[in-house]
Length: 148
Image (tube, rainbow, N blue to C red; front, side, top):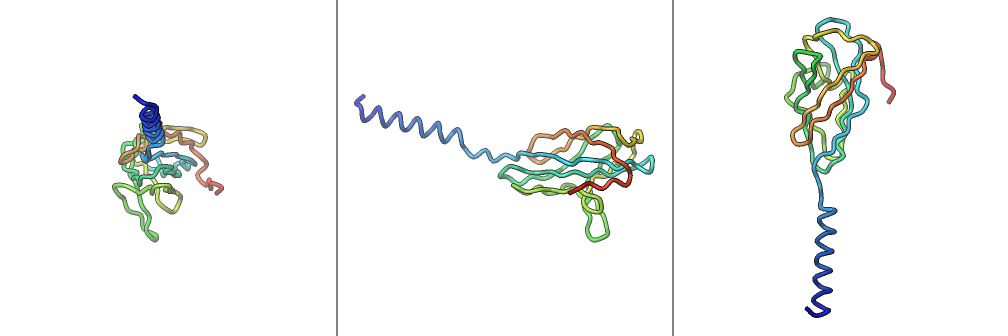
């Protein structure tokens, strides 16, 4: 192999490794913040609010939420003054899904025990493509209002 061929081979290998290293990993990178549950006022149901940030280049959807705290957990979308159960909520690429009081939220039905202020429990958020995300949810006062 002559010097020019060796140089070309080395440059090709370097370029290939560089591209492999920065090769557009566009899979969703999910981050969850601000999770909380206002202390339930009934034994049967409660809401949970949080923010889901998609730091990836691919749009995602929140499709399911699981926890040992309730018999069923549903995803609700609020349209005007009416809430409706939905199969999923979008989390845009590079965007945010906010679940907040008076807006989109998670509804815990059939609580297995009524958590009190100061308690913490775990939920797992499931998405279309991203790995599930486990989140610790603190129980706040029934009238708690997060600072934005």
